[in-house]
Length: 271
Image 1 (cartoon, rainbow, N blue to C red):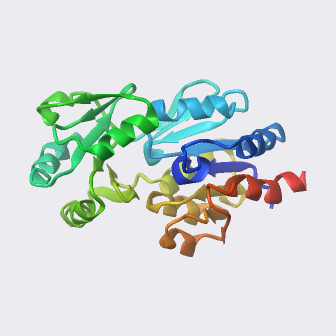
Image 2 (spheres, one colour):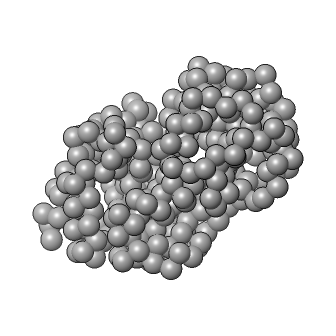
């Protein structure tokens, strides 16, 4: 298959354990773009946490896209235009905060430039801040202070605590919101129907590209729908077992240049 579009997750996929893009991976993606392929960075991160990577990979020059908030906001890197956005239903915010009041988790959301967190800040919240290099504002009254439109909520905390939250939230908001882990210590709460796999068809339709022409890379639970949708879904060697089970193939880990090696084999060698 002549793959025309490469969708790649960031953490645990595009970057290694040190949160770096290796020279080999960067070269493979740049060379693929030089050969006419397009790249989508598909991440749970807010746009500010993705822009530096997009610039480093020259997505603005090669008309690539940022798919942030797991597809809740899709941005053209060439024009900086938001081509798709799905906002979180604000009417659930106060209820969610009330449901989680006895849990030791941080509730986070995002505007275009900052992270907003409730007062239960923990080490995992600072991890999100440090990974994305975005300013964090701690809110004493989260519901009152979050006055702006937003695309998702992110819970940060101990994995077992988040497992309990996930079970409660999935039951309470069944058919209303989507709840999925993006890391053992991060739980994403999304508008219903917003996932990487459900939003990719919207973009592919705009680009006139079929799913069979899409190759996608990921490692965690929020990548499952994307990998399942793509014509070639590739799970990283370090991926969760559930991700590997639905993938077409499993490549090397993010510390072994798995993305680069697969692109070299499936795209660059065929040029």
